[in-house]
Picture 1: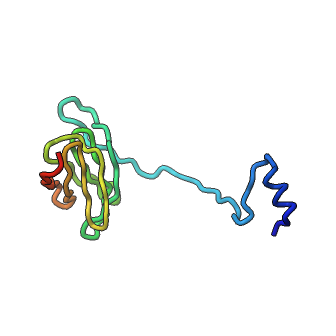
Picture 2 (picture 1 turned 135 degrees about the vertical axis):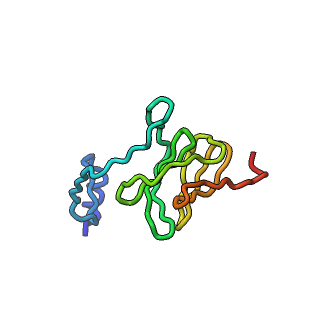
Picture 3 (picture 1 turned 60 degrees about the vertical axis):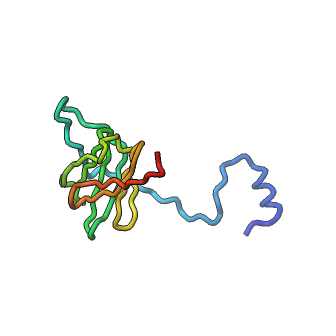
Length: 131
């Protein structure tokens, strides 16, 4: 434990300060393992821009899910296998995905709804109060 004088001197010092309560700094390495690609567009053979990525679980099965600027949602199995792609009602660009236990929601500029990964479909929630 530091004395009062040591604490005062430490506060006044311009040196980088390291907490006395922290342990050894960990050394972390990251390696690239898998790559997932969205299917190409049919009209111009390019990939749509990804707007959000999420990990979801439905009926005990885990999926990687990607939303895109064409209003599409693409699902991949846990091992990276392509499951399928579908568009949300309204075909607006999907701005984001929200995951909760067993539930996946999408939202666009004008609507939102539930995503059924098993059935490769999305159901819009009709809310007349939102414009």
